[in-house]
Length: 421
Image 1 (cartoon, rainbow, N blue to C red):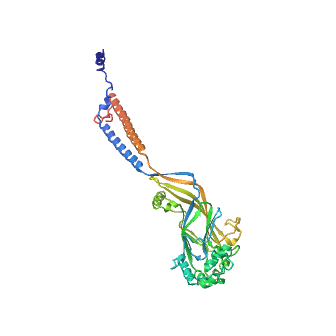
Image 2: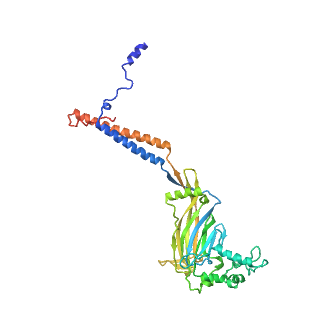
Image 3: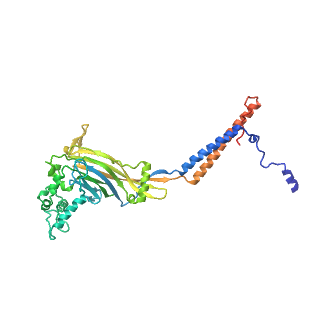
């Protein structure tokens, strides 16, 4: 019985016969084969390039960092403000106040042509005072003239007396009456520098809260409702023009990761790729012809994180800015260019003020690359899709040609249409 069953199977083709049109070789089929191969190679090459390309995905999340500090990197030039008059102060919403910051900050005196005055750095000037102190007798203890005395109880230099006045909240507008200042020739130095400018640069640390940075006459020269020339008598009759026109060469908010060489290099590369190398205030110029003039910049600081393919995370910051200028000679009230009356709620001081606010969001720029599984799947889809479409086109052309032949059409026989091989 089994023998008869297998004998019956001999006449059965389990896979069926190959269709007749597949056996036909035509020039059209060969052409479609070549075109299909070229398309497959081109699309596969494009897919490989896309697979190797590194893309940057941007997302926004809530900034959950706590207790961090920001580093402000600044470089500003005031062409008509002497360095002794310029003070860098910081205050924030937490109540922290830093006055006359000198740590990590360099002041450079500039002549009337904007060039650096030789041996004019703050550190070098301070060394001159140290030499004078060394020449004094060991038991010398100078008076603070009513100012708040330091821990040692002595004010041996003019700078010590000035700081004592500052800490007491007094104005230090008449150093000629101070013995230490007379001995050091402090007043003469101020008069010599009256026609100079000043460049201030450095890095300062601020709390990651709402705050502001002041570049203005120091607290030593500030009292309520007083004119700038009343605060600094040497400026009144020197015949020089003094105002807070300035040029911002660089102003950036930096993260601690940017002081790591490898992280900084990775972050810099991503910045260049995204076109984020320039800060909004870099190269900004502000000019005025009035001594009583106030420049205000309102900065919105956004935390930013760069994530590289090798797993590095670089924390930094970006900011946007708007600017406001105010003529202080108008007092508390004034009018806009359109004739609208404006009332100022707070009094102002001449100088440049940078008010910064921290955004609660974190912008994440992450490098990504297509997975190999995705590349393999896409390549298979390209090959299968191209062959399928080519087969359909070839079948249509072959069937059309055969029908034309049967109906007596005049289709050329030498270039018949056939199935893709």
